[in-house]
Amino acid sequence: MMSAKVRVRFAPSPTGYLHIGNARTALFNYLYARHTGGAFVLRIEDTDVERSKREYETALVKDLRWLGLEWDEGPDVGGPFAPYRQSERLGIYNEYLNRLIGEDKAYKCYCTGDELQARRDAAMAEGRTPEYDGRCARLSREDVAQFENSGRAFTYRYRVPEKQVIVRDLVRGDVEFDTALIGDPVIMKSDGTPTFHYAVTVDDALMEITCVLRGEGHLPNAPIQVVLAEDIGFAAPEFAHMSQTLAPDGGKLSKRRGAMSLGDFREKGYLPEALVNYMALLGWSPGGNREVLSLAEAAELFEVGNLTKSAAYFDPQKFAYICRRHMQSAEGQYLARLGRAFLDKEGLAVDDEALARLVEMARERMEKLEDLPALVRQYTGRLELDADARTALQEETAAGVLTDFTVRLAAAGSVDEAAVKAAFKATQAATETKGKSLYMPVRAALTGSTSGAEILEIMPILGLEEVLSRLEGAARMTRGG
Ligand code: GLU
Image 1 (cartoon, protein in one colour):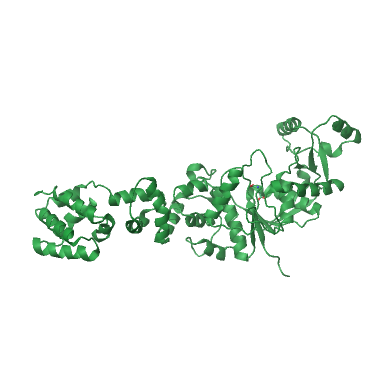
Image 2 (cartoon, rainbow, N blue to C red):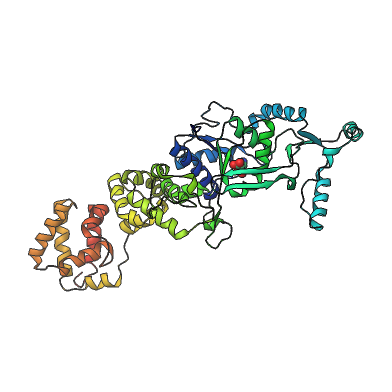
């Protein structure tokens, strides 16, 4: 049997910003589609008019693009099943509602919000489940006429058939539910907008979604969606309910523990490659102890059946490690381009050549580009000499070395490797010093320390002028200065 092409969707409600938890759902859908050569659909679930905001949709589109999770169909790119924004599909929901009403599978419910709440409270107090009691499913003609005449607002509820439902879940296996335990859900609200269950069911079917991959919090919704789909005459999709992401201590992710919005991560200069990599490891493993991988590599290795059932924990140390690994391997030009904005923000002017060198020195010590300005300052700013550096300058020969070396570099007019080496050679001969006595005063003068950055590396970054000025400053601190 030929299996149908995989079609998956990410269906965010634009009621807030994306964070690692929900962006991970988008990522796994993307990986599943790319691995199988299927389609990745973006559908905006904006039927909750009060909570949905266009600015959130704009932000999440920007965030997904930043991560590199391009979709094949969606509100902005279109596709064969457009529109992809639920608020533009109200006519479709009405059409199927009328069908359900015609077949007596949906009915009007006149219960008010207050009445429903009071009954829920009473049920809870008596230890019963607070499901809808089905009262409007059994109204007499007279009751209906009375409600209609009084102009009562109404919703439509779906008459859930009593049966055992199997939810086919690629992560959890077949999960069986008894629908007798499920109250009839509202499918159309009194304002004429569909509820989540209903819109999702209709859209997943019409958009030919083959597998609904989403957070495990939605598992209890799956049986309703399966029976509803079948009652409308659709084939129910498969599901893959992935585990949650929790904070290291098992609590909910909080802002300080990984639940920053993706926009926050971007503003701090985290690399999207690192985020995508880390998110992919939350509940999935490429196998072979492999941890560092690109989006394309993850897509190649991804198997939906390998998603874990157990919760994933956000691990700040592992996250930092993955971030550093991507910093180390990223293209220098790419880092320089991103890093420039962070230097500009702090008024640090560095020319392109120096920036390229600074990035090479700093990348080993950065987790995010927000760390760059401090490192640049450390490499280029005014120096505080540490105790060892001050001791090195107290050596008898230090003054002579610094003065001679300064003159030779100034004459060479360059701090490239050849000029620096030639200057050292000449100073060595002229001052009859070598080894530590020759190099330490220079190193102390340039870096403020007797260990750390290599002299040959740091000079081109500082530039000739800064080198000369540091050498002269240090010469004044020597015994002879
Ligand atoms: N709009 C729903 C949410 O954001 C999507 C649920 C689903 O994937 O079915 O939770």
